[in-house]
Length: 500
Image 1 (cartoon, rainbow, N blue to C red):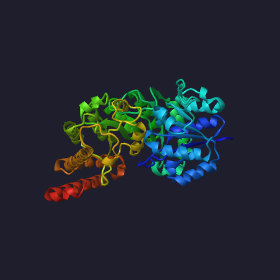
Image 2 (cartoon, rainbow, N blue to C red):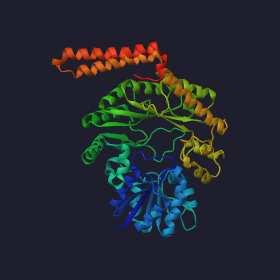
Image 3 (cartoon, rainbow, N blue to C red):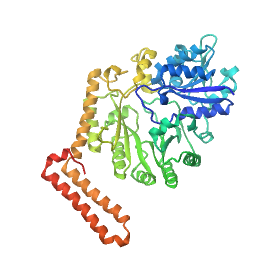
Image 4 (cartoon, one colour):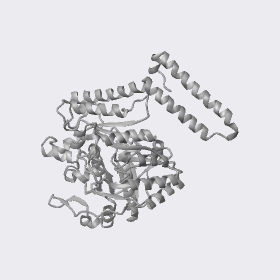
């Protein structure tokens, strides 16, 4: 049986966080087509260039599939050269965001044989089934004998319920479970119906798996890996309130913890409360800015109030909110920065620090990526310039802290001033958070809340015969907490050193 090597390149500056599911589904299609799929996960295995070259030679394969993001362009260029150096006839298929949005550049600048445009499940099956006449396959781009880039008709999309379960065993499982613990990441949907200006989407439209198909895979994972939790890797896991409640019923039944990405205009307090009860522990949301003017420029179709409600309601029900925030979007200035500072102060939310892990905020620099409206706009204005040079610099991505790694500055600030503004904003947000955390009133409120929680939890688990002794224990707990609070009132310096 002929082997097909499916490759996951490394991602500069990024650590292994979850299984790369897209290439897993492609592996299933390769096997169904009568080939043997083997995944070479360079990223998870942290392989050196020499180790990669050795493994490519040892595979003795003639067909290679590579999943590549725009921010992996530099490594991709090297990888193509390494594969072709082994044998010029090696057949290379590229899939993912880079070849989808930049197939013309990829085909002209590298020796890539075929670019898969968009979703590749059906395309790879048809391509492998007809290798001698692959140019008749829909959903691909290639260079013909006249040195022209040819794009074939659009490929139809697969029904998500027709997908075989994710082949986690084809990946270096230990490397991923070391990060995920007793959990896995999984997909529930493909695509997103919204059109944020900064977003680079590989898949258009929106499709969802049925709850029955999802449940079947989750039961399979419980039986095989004894999983305790699930993280959805979707761009948008909950597409409607009804869908949210269906997931609540499923996870309550399976007794699994879960989390994923949501829209702030879909989840309300009532739904969040039900989600928490069903086992939801964390939710990500693209808050992006505390300025309505910036949100409108982004075409987010959300409001500052909806963002605020999401954070406060998550904290109220006990779900950890993961906030995505973009700094330096076109139009960002001192006024919009102050709006964001005030927003997070009111929400009592802050970027992460090593000594505090109660919440998480990812702050990125606004960066035009191929496939986004933002990229098209700045390319057409001539600001991006040479696209190949731009992609080479894009390796560091958008989570950067050094002005020298900045790909494109979309503000009126200089690069140095932009980064100083970002650093100052994050520090101010953090200081506001800690000042409130350490205030007497806030500590008193938290004291009362903790006492009530302690008492409620203890009473619920209290055997009837321990009634009197149990009440004595609760009384002692209350007295201990009030003694601690009295000490703080008497010595304000302790505020910066102790926590309840």
